[in-house]
Length: 225
Image (cartoon, rainbow, N blue to C red; front, side, top):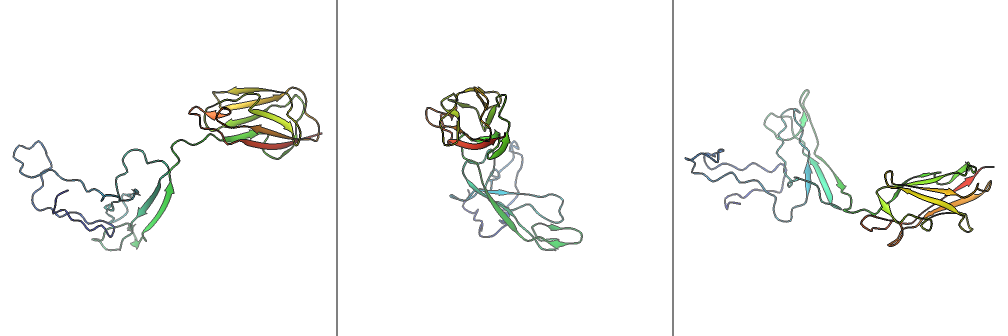
């Protein structure tokens, strides 16, 4: 950045740089004697800020700047969005209602992006947790859906047991296309009995395709008569 390009950054909107002479916009112009336009860049260590610009809102000028937001946002990062308000004068910068003119107060909010590689989770179960009067004959099929493709799903990592008792025999099938595990007991379930389903995560148990383990998931339901 040129030495003369000293810009106050304590307030928004950051004022435009004053041109010192004619600025040539065509870099292919053989008669140009001026350096190319230098982009307005944030100072070293500036926070990541996402700016929302609104068009056709009166005399508002979309000039606030808080840092580039080109490409994907960084994972696990706090971002701040700022909308700069303005006054009801034709020369003022900022956002306000045009007719009738009404100033908009500057507002801001923050959000945090998702982590780069989240652990798999269970997004849905059937029956749902604490369900009652669940059909016990058939036998019933208990299912759970994961947030992403997983591996390590088998009869030792996906189990059903009488609550407070031992596991019961069941067939376990994982459907990679739907990211769903199905647990089918070998026989009808006992009536009016609480059962607990366990999906065990771990380095050698249920985990995603990058070996990030599922946090072990358990839920219970009660059969009907």
